Length: 106
Image (cartoon, rainbow, N blue to C red):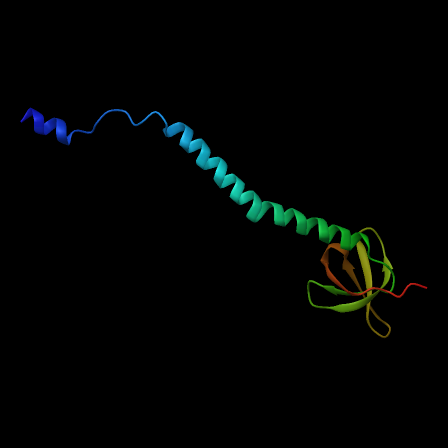
Protein backbone atom coordinates (compact mmCIF):
# COMPACT_ATOMS: atom_id res chain seq x y z
CA UNK A 1 0.00 0.00 0.00
CA UNK A 2 2.79 2.39 0.82
CA UNK A 3 4.39 1.86 -2.61
CA UNK A 4 1.11 2.73 -4.28
CA UNK A 5 0.79 5.92 -2.24
CA UNK A 6 4.25 7.07 -3.35
CA UNK A 7 3.43 6.33 -6.97
CA UNK A 8 0.26 8.44 -6.83
CA UNK A 9 1.66 11.19 -4.63
CA UNK A 10 1.84 14.86 -5.51
CA UNK A 11 5.59 14.78 -5.88
CA UNK A 12 8.16 17.24 -4.72
CA UNK A 13 9.26 20.68 -5.92
CA UNK A 14 9.26 21.47 -9.66
CA UNK A 15 12.50 21.56 -11.60
CA UNK A 16 14.91 24.39 -10.81
CA UNK A 17 14.98 25.74 -14.42
CA UNK A 18 11.35 26.91 -14.30
CA UNK A 19 12.18 30.48 -13.28
CA UNK A 20 14.71 30.99 -16.05
CA UNK A 21 12.42 29.58 -18.74
CA UNK A 22 9.62 31.87 -17.52
CA UNK A 23 11.86 34.93 -17.82
CA UNK A 24 12.97 33.90 -21.30
CA UNK A 25 9.37 33.32 -22.38
CA UNK A 26 8.29 36.74 -21.06
CA UNK A 27 11.20 38.43 -22.85
CA UNK A 28 10.25 36.66 -26.10
CA UNK A 29 6.62 37.75 -25.72
CA UNK A 30 7.67 41.34 -25.09
CA UNK A 31 9.90 41.26 -28.20
CA UNK A 32 7.03 39.93 -30.31
CA UNK A 33 4.65 42.63 -29.02
CA UNK A 34 7.29 45.30 -29.60
CA UNK A 35 7.98 44.37 -33.22
CA UNK A 36 4.36 43.61 -34.17
CA UNK A 37 2.45 46.29 -32.25
CA UNK A 38 4.48 49.02 -30.58
CA UNK A 39 7.10 49.81 -33.23
CA UNK A 40 4.68 50.09 -36.21
CA UNK A 41 2.39 52.33 -34.14
CA UNK A 42 5.28 54.66 -33.26
CA UNK A 43 6.29 54.80 -36.93
CA UNK A 44 2.74 55.69 -37.96
CA UNK A 45 2.54 58.44 -35.32
CA UNK A 46 5.82 59.90 -36.62
CA UNK A 47 4.47 59.95 -40.19
CA UNK A 48 1.21 61.64 -39.12
CA UNK A 49 3.12 64.26 -37.11
CA UNK A 50 5.35 65.02 -40.12
CA UNK A 51 2.33 65.26 -42.42
CA UNK A 52 0.55 67.70 -40.06
CA UNK A 53 3.70 69.80 -39.75
CA UNK A 54 4.05 70.09 -43.54
CA UNK A 55 0.53 71.40 -44.16
CA UNK A 56 0.44 74.60 -46.19
CA UNK A 57 -1.96 77.06 -47.80
CA UNK A 58 -3.65 75.65 -50.88
CA UNK A 59 -3.18 71.98 -49.95
CA UNK A 60 -6.14 69.74 -50.71
CA UNK A 61 -6.83 67.64 -47.57
CA UNK A 62 -9.19 65.00 -46.19
CA UNK A 63 -10.58 65.11 -42.64
CA UNK A 64 -11.54 62.20 -40.41
CA UNK A 65 -15.18 63.06 -41.08
CA UNK A 66 -14.68 62.59 -44.82
CA UNK A 67 -14.73 66.28 -45.74
CA UNK A 68 -12.39 67.29 -48.53
CA UNK A 69 -11.29 70.88 -48.79
CA UNK A 70 -8.57 73.35 -49.64
CA UNK A 71 -6.61 74.95 -46.81
CA UNK A 72 -7.14 78.71 -46.71
CA UNK A 73 -5.78 79.49 -43.24
CA UNK A 74 -3.60 77.73 -40.66
CA UNK A 75 -2.85 78.17 -36.97
CA UNK A 76 -1.14 75.83 -34.52
CA UNK A 77 -4.42 74.09 -33.66
CA UNK A 78 -7.02 75.09 -36.29
CA UNK A 79 -7.16 74.65 -40.05
CA UNK A 80 -9.69 76.59 -42.14
CA UNK A 81 -10.89 74.63 -45.15
CA UNK A 82 -12.79 75.92 -48.17
CA UNK A 83 -15.13 73.05 -49.05
CA UNK A 84 -17.08 74.94 -51.72
CA UNK A 85 -16.90 78.41 -53.21
CA UNK A 86 -17.29 80.89 -50.32
CA UNK A 87 -18.02 78.05 -47.84
CA UNK A 88 -15.36 77.73 -45.16
CA UNK A 89 -15.13 75.31 -42.24
CA UNK A 90 -12.76 75.40 -39.28
CA UNK A 91 -11.36 72.02 -38.28
CA UNK A 92 -8.94 70.98 -35.56
CA UNK A 93 -5.52 70.30 -37.02
CA UNK A 94 -5.44 66.79 -35.51
CA UNK A 95 -8.53 65.83 -37.55
CA UNK A 96 -6.69 66.11 -40.87
CA UNK A 97 -6.23 62.53 -42.07
CA UNK A 98 -4.43 62.89 -45.39
CA UNK A 99 -3.09 65.36 -47.91
CA UNK A 100 -4.78 64.62 -51.22
CA UNK A 101 -2.84 67.14 -53.30
CA UNK A 102 -0.06 69.53 -52.31
CA UNK A 103 -0.31 73.15 -53.44
CA UNK A 104 1.71 74.06 -56.50
CA UNK A 105 4.91 75.92 -55.60
CA UNK A 106 5.11 79.36 -57.11
